[in-house]
Length: 232
Image 1: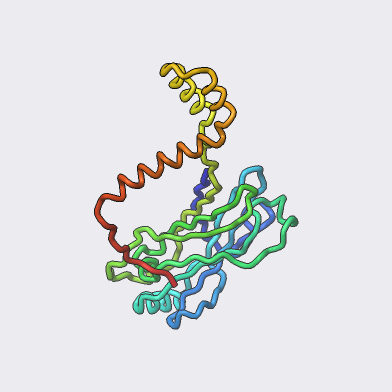
Image 2: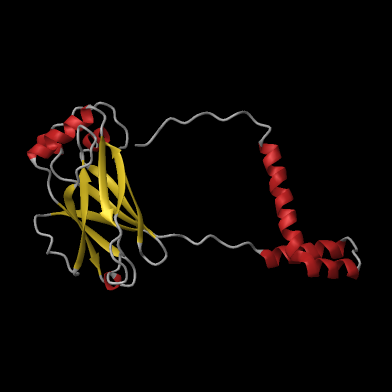
């Protein structure tokens, strides 16, 4: 389950309850050579479930000008966070191991008026394994933006995304249905014993044949198109 938390803006990072914070950094350069500096801080709060709030700084006049220059040349806006546990009581279990980075087009950041969604992806233990960023809206349309009004304060929604366990195959139900079908068709007990003994080999084969048949049917359609996009 994801915890959605709005960002908070202020000069002090000590106003939050809880005793552990990690920096949120960003970089936007005309020459596309990353030079990260602090954008704010992720404040981790105590509890069984990961809970994180975000405190952010305002953009300076110099940063606003630079961001618009990067947007004009279709440059990138990058963010990064350190690899850490998102639980305050587990910070001593593993040392910080590098950074996780995500990026979006700088023009999208400008035209969204600094409105973005940052998602922190964790493993089952709460260790941070990924970060992603999208802007709202996400497209670049060439809209003119007044930096004095719209490019001062980030409007960020912070999301924590933990892995979701996929449901396992209903093997017992499948075997029960197979046995019922065999009884309806009058299969002799010897065949039923054979199936009960070697079901672990039969079931994967049946599933493989079913999947192969579905792929053959779908393969008869038209060819696929190429998608636009790329990464840096």
